[in-house]
Length: 214
Image (cartoon, rainbow, N blue to C red; front, top):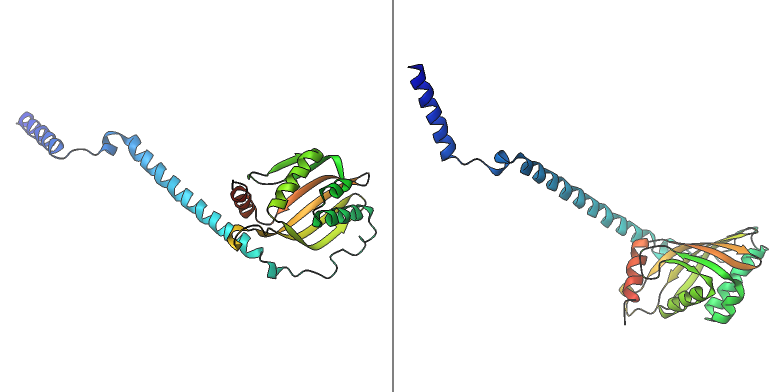
């Protein structure tokens, strides 16, 4: 009798198994793990995208020109007589006049000028030729600058300014940001410069878009 019951029970189990197909996850547990992993990855990507959007929005908001009034005299007290500052001011004057030959008077032949980012103009411009080619490109975009602060010692100058382009057809096609430049002066000329953008996201987008034009 026990043997008969076992046979009947086994038959019932088989009947249920045949009537109700097993899910793929039961047959292959690794599929369930894969789905969970993919879901977690999607959530992480969504969170990252939200954080990125927030960072871009914050960078745009803080760079608004009205937030940064320009002083009458941007030179920091004690910097007025700095020889290094006079070199940078001479460079500014030549650049403002669009005089590339005059600019060369203030820049070392082996200058290194670093532009941050992942855009078309990013990287270190080495030597006077790469340097002048870079500034010629900036000229195409119609870049202007309004200095907010200049501070200097014997060898270094810090320049904080509003820099904006004017060649785009609309405000959306131009860029308007705060920038900080650190100049190293050697033997009366600009030897090395590091440039910091107030909104690297916007910088990358602008330079890639503007200089992609034929």
